[in-house]
Length: 376
Image 1: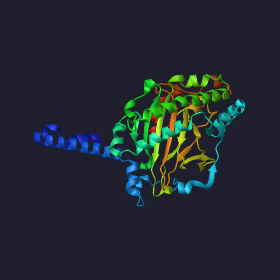
Image 2 (image 1 turned 180 degrees about the vertical axis):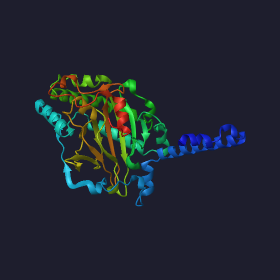
Image 3 (image 1 turned 30 degrees about the vertical axis):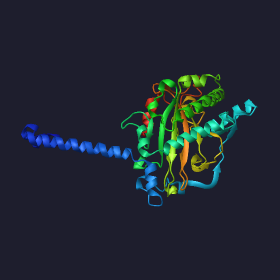
């Protein structure tokens, strides 16, 4: 006899139970659900900054300890700093700058730009207000927490994506959109420090010029008109999503990762780091520290630009490590499509000799698959 049939035979119907028993069972189920929800919320609110302040030189929770094959102490090429291309945006030889951007985007997927015309005091203010936010009392930071179950990444939090083997990154973060105005939700912009909004808006003003120059150069590098790549990507509706990564000191930095190996989902990422070493890139299957260059912007090519360029530009595989004694903070801005925007190889780059190498799909669907570790 089929197992389901047996179950039907031996399982009494609800009518066989007295009403008080049914109510007691229902109450138990409700309590179990509440407890489960409370546990999930507690895990969601476990902040690395709190764990770090409680750990000091003590052992750290096992959920942060990576397998030996992933531990940076074992997998980093020590004593060598990866000198990714450094591009001087102020070089009067525009052809040289153009060539350097195209070359770095094709062969490295990462480069640093100096003399980018964003004043150092504007960057300093951005860094100052971000650092001040993370130094606020925990209960004040929680006012900006990402709502439980939210489909958006915006807000203060710790967990971003499905965690492989339950391992957590040694990082807390704050996400919020800074452009375009129609996508901004000020609910997630800290009101304290009071100058937070002004500092972010001032940085954005200068950032637009950097984004435009990069898109124009990369468009020409693909054989397109200088305006075509940005237009295909979304034009002035491109989302600029700011993230602040806060990596507190860790007593055992060789055992943990701030953010595990990944490529960015965006078209490109423009990152401001502080002076604490932590960014690593994969080169020839090995992990290297990326040399810190004062006042430079770090540029990552992301998945969407690799797709749009049909593979000419390469998304960079990178990760972050943490320090034993110092706090590392970084400010990436992810330049992304709108959620409903369909991204695929640019039609002008597809022909018989160069067929499409990537699927065309809505960005929101791509992001869902990526964050939940579902094959694209």
